[in-house]
Image (cartoon, rainbow, N blue to C red; front, side, top):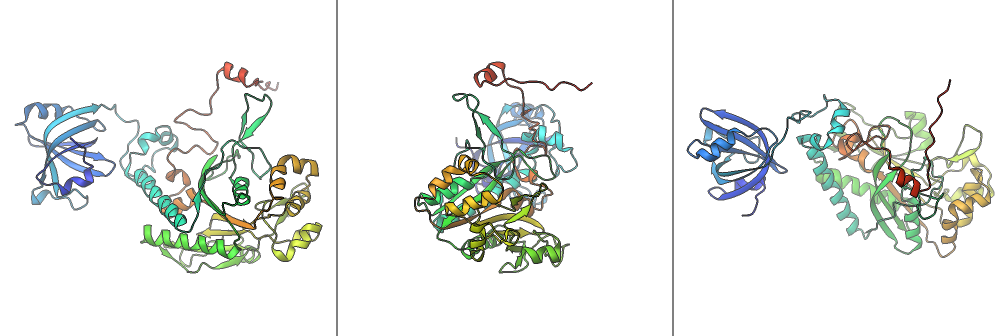
Length: 468
């Protein structure tokens, strides 16, 4: 007999159905016993009566979070017992048979309510239980719907979803890499990708023209606020595009997401305002300004673009580093300055960031597709030619073989969701997040590994001597 999802049972009044799920609550009214049965789709009231003695006696043993299979008839509830708050509030299940599929010990945390009052370490240690609460379940389901909407939109726009490698090369891109030792080549290492930046540009050289990916990004950064060592980007790149093309595509997609999936939200201004970096810093003292006219309105979404960023900024040591991305192109009027390595402090880049209510949710640029220009960027940053070609020679080589002009953008998907779902941090919209310092309390990672594994990798662990 097929299993019915709870949400569909109301369409089958008078029919025998089979349902499976978790015991949400159990209660008695006189001699009649009720349980609320929960599955991914909703809650159904289930009725046990003494006349069905074997099943009734078994039902007396049921406890919260036991997993059960029930077969019975869907019937209308009495008028005075209708619950308008749930989809199945007009029906109930009159039980014929009951099977216990799995028992549950008393949960180490409550899954009632929103869970904000429970210590985060407890919630993360028992994340598989924390995800049973309605808020968390809905966050992940709506996240899926938004990602599906994005995929369908980009598909219609002619983009192909292409996966890029997780094992790659360590290159200086701003953050610290997670590195992975190679067993076959002792002493050499892969890196986990900080972003698919180089691969997506190489896909443009390959002639794919329109690429996107829901990409995992991994950065070994020091603990800092609302950060995660791994997070998800909507990453996209296109050939033969201008800054206007990428910004228009992004803006249309964001507007459609809000209008179709968050109709209770109001976008403050369409088209999104554009603010230069210089003006944003002068007026808001931020390159991700919060331009909401009413900051008390939780449903108000104030998107804006920040453009005309400086390409380089001074390091603490007095040298130069990039402000956003070393692969960005200078604005056309600064091409000669870049190639001649002059007027460095005034060179502007084609970078464009999109902000929402005071948070950067995406950033992109038109890229350098000429090897000589990319080389100058790294020379300005103080890299010697041999280092540039050792770290980025593959990019220089690729750009020699007919590289098209190209550009793109990446969204911090977790940040977008946290803002749209009105959550306080990105951990609330991720299935299995880590602590700010990179620990997975549920899996107890990072952890030590077997000495045999270390030997195979030609790695030895030296413990730091305690200072006297």
